[in-house]
Image (cartoon, rainbow over all chains, first blue to last red; front, side, top):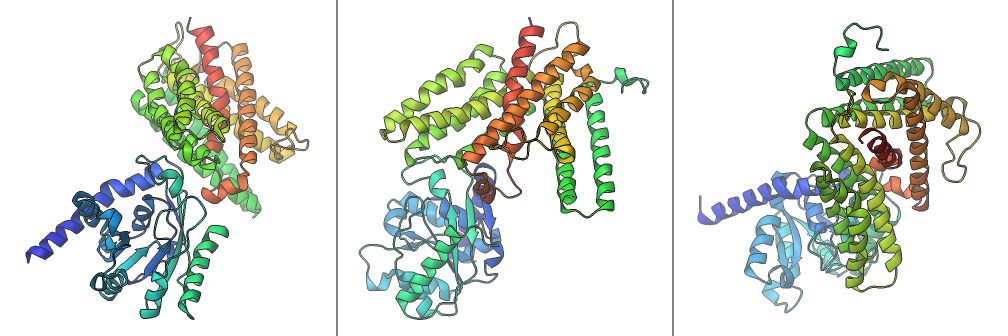
Length: 219
Length: 317
């Protein structure tokens, strides 16, 4: 076994232990996370899960949807300028959350965020994507960044699954360190079939997320 | 009930109580099964589900009560935690309330710790005095004044009802034996919980069977005078069968049961008003299986503190 693959296995082991011993009990017992529409999650990778973003808990809650063994193929897209601001934070978010760092600023061609995401999908990894690009407040969602529509255009066979997260921003809002145990909820919608222009596809993705917010739990 | 079995009174009160609950649950289960055999009304399926969850709740409660006092306090602490969590999830909280809410959850283990070390003075003032002073201070320091009074009042109310009120069960549990009687804190907790919950169940049953006249039309349209009176009367009769848990005379048992059942009804009514204010239909959207802890402990929030102070005043001095 090469040094790299040993490191990778250790990293996955650490993520699995962290999820089993801390993250999952915390979400289950303290937050009381409930999941609706789990059957809409594709059984095969790759796919793109798109959700609203209001809290650091969002990523944890979405990772909670998958079996431990699958976590190595689930990549939460995370802002590099935030999650790589120190070496420790970078190491922890890569190790414990298996994040895919995305550069929001100072984009260079060889490190274009879309390229990284496309490569991950082509490797058979699935993406957790927050198209708002940052954490918002409450029910109002910021405009969606066009990346998800570009990926849909380039890789039309990859299913895009909408999700809506409830109360995460109340449990752990931006700027707070300790969570308050509000009941939180994940709603997952049916995978989308997108067509048309990029703007139309982006509009359809947003409409699907908003529908989960406004129309209640998926049946 | 006690006369028929030789050696019955030699058994410990907790064991006797467990036997009585099992008998009641078996009777309820058989009755519901017979009802369902006769008719396939959907109401009976719901009734069967309710009885099934009563089996589970009774088993969990007895396990929590019977094994170890610390375990019991942790159990009651979790009831408070869960009820408070359901309450604040429904509250229209502001972003600025985050830290005050955090303090109110941290108050739960602290309040039960006072019960565990039997520091009555601190137990009885911690939430009404210190948390009452602390929460507005925290909200003030955050600095957002719009909605300040509403936040301070709503958070304190939740603490009083679900932490302070319910924690009286925890404190009661740690109380020693009552002089000149087999009753102790544990048996008194069993008594007040049994009477309150039986009264809830029997008020529901009587209301379903013969309920006509609404008692709280705008708050709880399904509650009726027939249910209220029938439930209290039958609970009073049942309470005589569990008098061995208490130091009460026959007449006093009836009087205390009347007090506890009426208070339980008040608690249920008050919590119904709270849920109606929050539009309870939305409440169900967040927590599947209808309602939650709050619906089960609403009556106890009222019955427990008053029962506690009654026995403390009349039987522990």
